[in-house]
Length: 343
Ligand SMILES: CC(C)(COP(=O)(O)OP(=O)(O)OC[C@H]1O[C@@H](n2cnc3c(N)ncnc32)[C@H](O)[C@@H]1OP(=O)(O)O)[C@@H](O)C(=O)NCCC(=O)NCCS
Image (cartoon, rainbow, N blue to C red; front, side, top):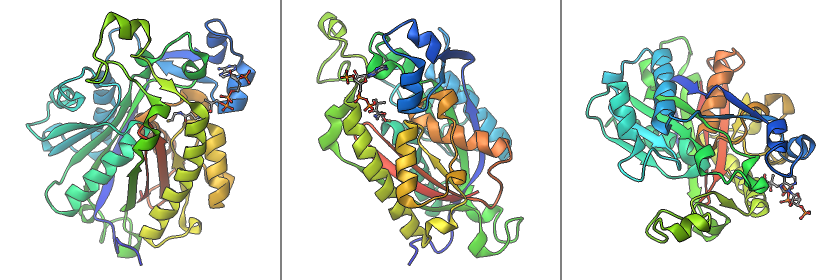
């Protein structure tokens, strides 16, 4: 039995922002001992975007949010909650979300960050869905944004080839605002968030972290010398965990929505590694033509990955109103999740 008989919230608009600077695999060949062939074969990445000096996380988040508000036809002043998923905030405190609130000109709505790494957008989507379902909020902005290029050791070939900068956003509102009698037909076809599933397993925290700068290792000359302020990752641990958990979370989201993979029009998976996505969708038995992909052009943008891909696919007319999208993501924590959304 589906837990949600019908959706309670829906995505009213999406947006994204990518910095203009392109760093290709060829550029990286000049920086570390790597090759275009290795990166392309092992990850599917050909290029990624890098934010210029002076651009900060809340700038990219605000640009993505403005595009999402515009598509939704919602004014910033109407927002009654702002959730920002990021592990690369403007600063340790306060939350990046309050800077986004100010840059957008939104009111004094609750504005907070989610630290769930690559799963940050799906955590935010799930929280927004709950607040809207209980009737406590009507217009919630969810942003996934990362400026990972500032937290990468550009001499470490095991991490620097993977990540890119960017932001994606979605504005959510009650499902019935446009649903029952609107363009999307009968209640069982109503657009909205059909299910979400979020999980975490802290036993794998040391497999992917930025150790320095927190209470465990406050910033000192030694933490800088030891490169503790950069991303450190055990890639294979994350790879195996991703294949296993993204499959089970996707199954869980399908079960909660009372659906099978046959009901899914598109898979919008976190773009960490093409091989991970291929293995997950093979296990799910989803046809390859249903897989949305932009990893070749943007790399791994962590929490921004899903909303960037979704927005690009919507604006290209590939994903259309009424289409059902399965989303799934896993990252540091490890934290992971999935969602099924009818657009
Ligand atoms: C990181 C990742 C691409 C590495 O691919 P892999 O197939 O597991 O590669 P390995 O780590 O086993 O390394 C294989 C070899 O390539 C080398 N290598 C690693 N990075 C390299 C690079 N950029 N260029 C060339 N060679 C590289 C390794 O040193 C190793 O060499 P060795 O066999 O001589 O020891 C892969 O593990 C991955 O994508 N993991 C998940 C990452 C992820 O999702 N992270 C974020 C979560 S959101």
